[in-house]
Length: 232
Image (cartoon, rainbow, N blue to C red; front, side):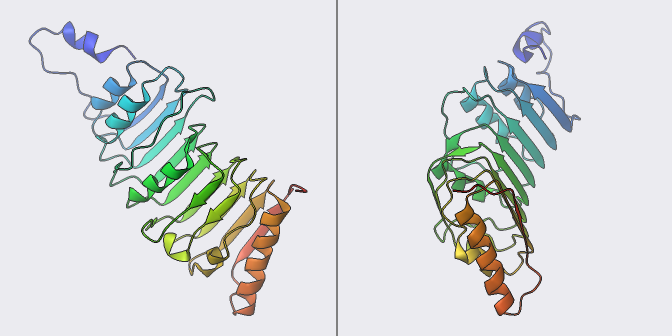
């Protein structure tokens, strides 16, 4: 897509160019991406691919303006410069979020709890860090589906059941250094399914232990699936 500023400069005396009726948009990397997003205020579904040359800070500022957005997918390049996820990000209607190769600092992941209606969170190389600690103030109020994929350096995950009060499905893929799944995950009343794939043997063992403890408490509905685990 062309630079909206240049297009507007050719329309002397005209109003700024807005695509008010556009609801779905998929864009490759563009130096004009932030300006394009500012002119599509009613988007409900947005996919951004290949962020190699994009202006990340400007793009994140533009995303905050998309208050009708329900689905967002961002796939960045492996070699993008490190960036921080704003702690005040607030998209009231966002329900589904997929982040791939964004490599946000691990501590920034708590910012996603500020998305009050987020139901599905899928991450792949999205965050970087050995520890993910959630205090009692961090609550993913409506999250039902959580996928953590290929976060190779994640070792310790500390959470309480109150951090994910509505979680139904937990999927872990490629977490080969994870020491264990937090015991408190089993205390989430809504949890129905845990899948462990290509993770550490310790992570798999802790998942089975959670299932066994739930069975001993009379909860036979929790399904645990373990696929091709690492020997570590």
